[in-house]
Image (cartoon, rainbow, N blue to C red; front, side):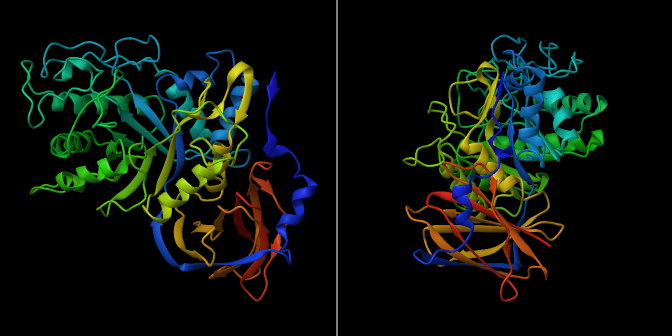
Length: 476
């Protein structure tokens, strides 16, 4: 058994000097103004859908000590990244073969108005157990998201390969209108979790509705989504459930933007029934604000092409590198105004970059993508507000947040080929504060650097290596 836990090791002496300015370096001035506030943060997270939760709980032989280690890496703020959002997949299959997700109503009751035949195993492909463990470590949001309705509710009679929900605009099904039955189905899923002691906080009914792949999927345009949102909203309210509705997990930011006008149309706009707009980063990245005043989450994105690259923060700017994801997270918050950012899979037994943590051969290996996430998620907690930040050097990009307890967390990313000195001026920081820098690059994983003392009332000075990321976290 081997456990990789580089974040527990002391910082290499050779990197201690990076905390202090050097006379031979170009300087950057970073300004943070905590009095200018933007969106509220809901958190950071991942999914373990399609039976990936079972990977964590030993499906491929991971021993209990490493199972606990992975859970702590993902969800424990003290030990690991402290993710606060978990995205569960609501199953639509009558089989648990391969990586299918089990349905709570695996077979048709006969018609939309027939009495449903629900089943609950208290396991949900290990997602229920994972949610329990995550909540015990500080999880604040459990997002239950369906990739598809059960096949018998759809135009193609298949949970896979797209198809539309029977009853929405533009469909005609011999079996009738299944919208209410599907809403009841989703509500029952939440009830099963609640009755078993776990609270689902967010509910979504679509995933990448522009795509019809060979796995669980369901097509929809904005008008069709709006049709169902109104039914689901009434059903949730009638059930007395305190759950926030989301839509629509578009395949890319542009594709989600295309759905917005139809969600906002009509005398009863569907947008008024939603708490969160969700979108993915695959087809187009979250680099601009969506046309809504509702909160926005980047709810799925990953490198689905590369072989697992655990130790590269930067080499040549490819999809799987840590610096790539550090910038994507930062841009999503500063330019797209998101309130949450989720990677696809948190941990899995795989040879690809689709997970943040790899668990092959009983070895737990966090990737540099994981540490890029942790640079944000460990210090920017739910309820934090993004605040104004800027840099005098284009190579140094910035973001900053104020937590509910007053702690300021600023992120500096050096995208350049040379190290920089920096001076950070923080307007509104508490008197007597100091700043602790945390560094991630090719040689460091969230490594704590020496404390930077305040100067001139609100300024801190230091240096940042080339192709690296620093989190500056204030404390008294």
